[in-house]
Amino acid sequence: MEKKTVSVYGFGRFGKFWANLLADDFNIKVYSRRGLKPEEVPVNMQIVDEEGIFDCDALFFCVAISAFEDVLKNAKDKYKPGTLFFDTCSVKVNPTKWMVTHLPENSPIIATHPMFGPDSFSVSKDPLPIVMCNINAEKQIFKNWVNYFSEKFMRVEIMTPEKHDEMVAYSQGVTHYIGRVLADLSLKPTKINTLGYVKILEIIQQTCNDSLQLFVDLQRYNPYTKKMREELHQSLEKIYSYLKDNGLE
Image 1 (cartoon, rainbow, N blue to C red):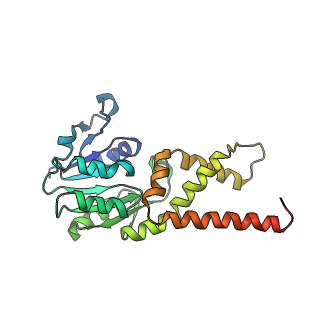
Image 2: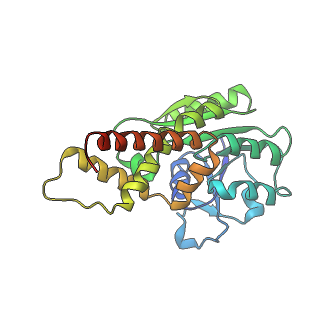
């Protein structure tokens, strides 16, 4: 059976990882708005222009959340009928609305969030979670992709975009927020690190290895993060006040 063609729009750190993950099973096309040189791309992938990236069976958008809606708008004359569209954004409510609004009417859409990056995927001993939201793809097509990712050492979690964003506002949102705060303290390893301190340093490394733009996007485009930030600051003030009440200035 002839391999299907899957396109990856965006070839940054995650896009490159994602294209490599899919390359064993599909013909892969890649495109980046910054332009790509042959030496940047594995020989088993085809570099194409923005017109060519949409000539495929399925397409994964691997672009920054803040750029995603403009990408969708600017490509409105390039979409091909029958293409199955995926996003890989770290939030789901807004990107899903953008895809429904700007992609051709009745386009099959599956919203996804791989809950890992290149670093964690390469070292994990257990299947890592990927969230999948079936927006309007046929049930069998959605099931086929669920099975595919399950076979790729992933644990598929099926939910709505709203449920996803509500959950990650606290899991991912808090982690990145605290990671940035701790990084601002310029914490360094010591000769007498406790295990807890080692874990704190690991959080800093993990969260700050991602771009600052991702951190801002996680806070800006998730409708539930404002509540998380308010509750986090209330808790910080509560603990600080407790110490003051116990005679500490």
